[in-house]
Image: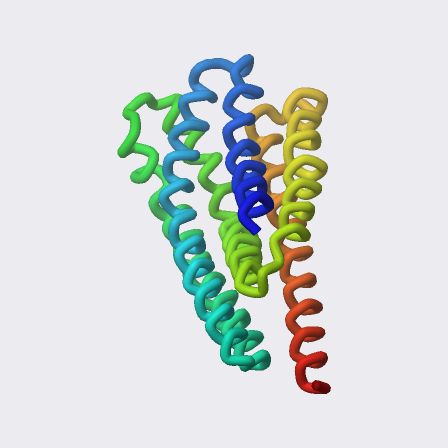
Length: 210
């Protein structure tokens, strides 16, 4: 269980970290703005991660008691809670983006870039919370390999490579990478929720027939 979980986490973190190196040729202002945004969303990510961790425990507890329908219910509640909190953090990022970026720097150029990038971060809050919570809940079902594969395909095939193409071939710069990040997290969220729904329903149906 541990190796796929570790690889999933590595894939997500390395996606955001790699962008810092890939945008280096755009200039130091873009690198600085990227670091500001990464620091902020790293703190915000603790919110869905906490919800997901609690979901893992509660799902595992329900399965241990052979309450398979309740496990599905807990998974659903975890996702909804993640969505509500994601909506709040997205709103905060939109309304307070300049203030939040100003905590890190007073450089006008860096502030302008960071404030714009934070709008992209606000857009993917719902998708990020969804993919985070659903992957954690699947761990409660002892399912870790499929989420790892989904993360690898989503982050590599829909995030890093398209991001590089948008940034340099389509001349979108740093915003090309963040457009691809929104896409990759959305793909991961949709696939993980679909698999969670399918797997949890099948488990509940099989146990009901026994």
